[in-house]
Image (cartoon, rainbow, N blue to C red; front, side, top):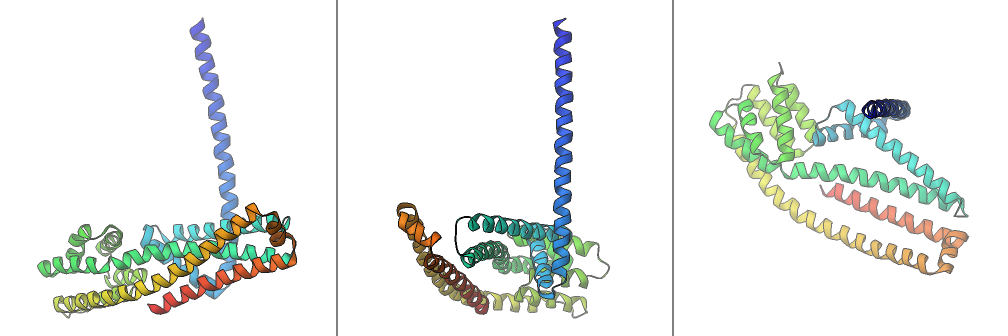
Length: 307
C-alpha cells in the first residue's frame, strides 16, 4: 500500500515539474520573441543611416574573425548588445532623475554611461583583433615553412594552421574549409583578407592571388614579405610602448580622481549635497565626465592615427 502511495506521489511530482518546465520554456520563448522584435526594429533604424549601417557591418566581419560564428549570429549579437546598452542607459536616466536636480547633468551622466559601454565593447573587439594581428608574423612563417615543401597553397594552409597560435590558426582553418569547397579560390581568399582587416594580411593575399593567376612559385615573394613584416613589427612595438605610456598616465590620473570623488561622497554629507542637489555641483560633475569622454576620444584617435 505504501509503495503504491509513494509511486503515486512521485508521478504527481513528475507531472507538476513537467508542467512548470513547460511554462518556463513558454515564458522564455515569449521573452525571446519580444527581444527579437526589438532587435529587428533596431536593425531597421540602423539600416536607415549609412554610417551606422557600415559600422555595424564592419563589426560583424570582425566578430566573425574572433568567434567564427555566422554573419547572422554576429549581427544578432551586436543588436542585442546595443539593445541592452540602451535599456540600461534609460533605466539609469530614470534613476538619476529622482536624485539629481538639474536635467542637463542627468542627460550628461546617462550619455557618458552609454558612451563608456560602447567604448569598452569596441575596446574588447579591438583587443581580440589586435591579438590576431600580433600572431600574423608567426602564422606567416608557419605557412612559408609548409609552402616551401609542397609548393601548393591549399596544402600549405592545411598543414600549417594546426601549428599556428590558436586565434589566427582558427581563421586559417576557416579559410581551409572554404577553399576546399570553392570553385573559385579567389573568393574565399579575398574574403579572408577583408575579415582579417590587416595591411600585411592584404599583402599576403595579393601574393597568393598571384600564384593562382599563373605566376608560379611565390617563395621569394613570401620570404620578402616575411622580412618586411618582422621589421615593421619592431617599429610598431616601439610606437605602441609610447602610446601605452600616455594611455596609462591618463587612466592613472583619472582613476585617482574618481576614487577621491567617490570617497568624498561617502564620507562627506556636504559633498553629496553639493554634487547632487545644487546647480554648481551638477555642472562640475557634468564637466568632469565630459573631460573624461574627451580624454578617451583623443587617446583613441591618436592610437588610430599611430597605426
